[in-house]
Amino acid sequence: MTTTASAARRETLHRRIRLIVGITIAYNLIEAIIAITAGTIASSAALVGFGLDSTIEVLSAAAVAWQFTRRDPERWEKPTLRVIAVAFFALAIYVTATSVSALITMERPEHSTIGIILTAVSVAVMPFLSFAERRAGRELGSATAVADSKQTLICTYLSAAVLVGLVANSLFGWWWADAVAGLVIAVFALREGIEAWKGDACATSVGMLLEDEDDDHHDHDHGHDHHH
Image (tube, rainbow, N blue to C red; front, side, top):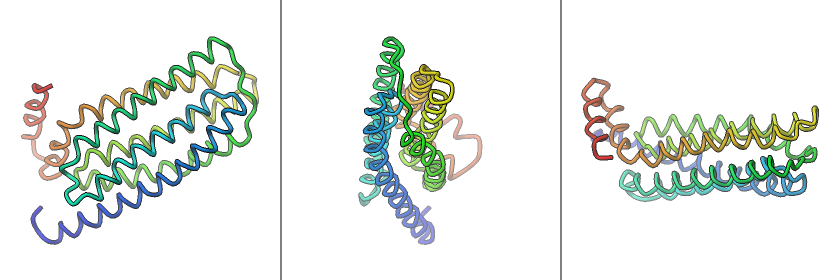
């Protein structure tokens, strides 16, 4: 990794990740404002949860953006991963709470055209951002970029689930679809949060995995597991 070519390549990848997280932040801020407003109007737990997810996605992306503006991004992997993990946990707790309360109160969300359009647009846009960031992150061996790309991917699943919930509610009057969609997402978020939290040990392994594809990295991983 010491050759100048790979140093130039790393710089390119750092720039690319900064650009991707920049777009992600801008998109999610707009999305958060629209979703929280529309969700409050339609009293849709999933829509509000979706807006908050966008806010958390902004946090996660901002942490990565900050990390990649540092001179030596690799040094900041661990604290950045912790920030991303906490963001996932916060999301899981919030979405669970709103979904459960919606199921208990049997609150029927109203039809929300804005919500349907917004989530449909997200389902179209998000996977591209996630895929681009993951590819750059993998090549760099950056666990934070990969974790943030998963955060964006959860945002996509969330968009799809909220979209299905909103449509099911509007077409068939399935008021509970909205809340169930929320719970499914909470489980996803929790899993990714745990991954990101544990990811501090794997950050080095990811780098090693990319350097050499031979078997000794398995022992490397086991060695790490004993520390936890």
